[in-house]
Length: 180
Image (tube, rainbow, N blue to C red):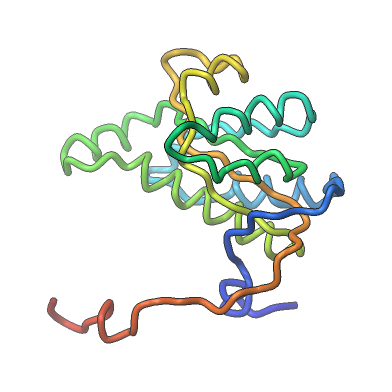
């Protein structure tokens, strides 16, 4: 078993996948890790749409590329797409969001995405979070109601890419103690 820091070091945004299905048990564990993600006031403002059907996956993938971004074609290669849709939060989270001028569901959805991607890495799978897509087309493809907003697509599969070294800012640039 990996330590948590080893898992974090292993996880990366993969953009090439084997044409191999993901075992149902692995996918269930990944989704359970997402389901258990923390959220403000336990609002759980999300719905995860799992797309495995090849025809629908291709339609979802088509929403991720356009005249500006054409590099997202890898989204059709992954055997699973998890579309994260923002749902209404509970009254406590809504009140907190209003009082603090922060939209807590956005934080919650980021935490959910992190849980899904780290769980995928723990299962030996690659993943990539995609935020560039045509919302209107995606809503139509997946029959998402107009009052719901798809926020992210996470592709998951057996990566063909080697683990790359992390290029990050030096600790001194991003960490301080007791004051800014």
